[in-house]
Image (tube, rainbow, N blue to C red):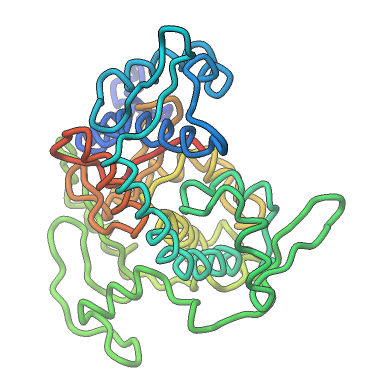
Length: 366
């Protein structure tokens, strides 16, 4: 991938393009999700049939003509998960095997464990916005990334009137935060620094040694990981270290109070994006999903270039149907470090296919 930004050359020749270095492990994470996606989506389709197993002839109605053949291949390839019954006078139908049904039943428990996590993350999502509200269509756009049930508007929101309400604003439905909780206005980055002992009880900075890779374990520093092949020179590292030391406002303070052109305000935007990705299960979102928060979070107009500039924290891959933005520190190679209860369940179900290494950041269309 090449960035559309140029260097001037001293000889007056054609300017050189800046190279965007690939992180092959994160590209591989996108490839690893393909098989789990098919398995989990087919499981959901089968379970959605209320009165009878899924007729193979109806599969095309569910997923379309092209995708039907991908699912037919999955049915044939994974007999430990799917079985076909019927034929010879009766329409063939597909269902889960007994072992798959047993593991699938554990999803209820995983969803129950997820609910308090989701309520907390949804409150934080609203607290990051300028008016403590977001269009419902924006939340629906990222519901799967967060782990929300597809019917969260009916199954979850009404259960917590003390936290959420739905309001009409200029003809659009918004999810409104009902009360502010200061205890939630702590970022995942700040929680990590406290856990690692970088911050004491009052948040003061301990004496630390500056490393040579741009990482500075301080109160206002972010964890950086430059890609293989990228060799920062001394002046670049000095600039990064100055940036790491620079104070910035909390992402939970209202963005209207800051001018985006100010360096501290721009660093705050980095913290907003960092926190937003942390609120997702797989610590990644498509670029379109991030851009959906442009107005409510006061994100920069040229968001893609903004992310590229901070390639020590974020990685953009074009693997898959859409470009995806990763939070690099959340991954060890191709594997997600921390798993939510729902991801743990998905890993266990997909393991029935015989897959040895399950991608913890499984992605599946809603």
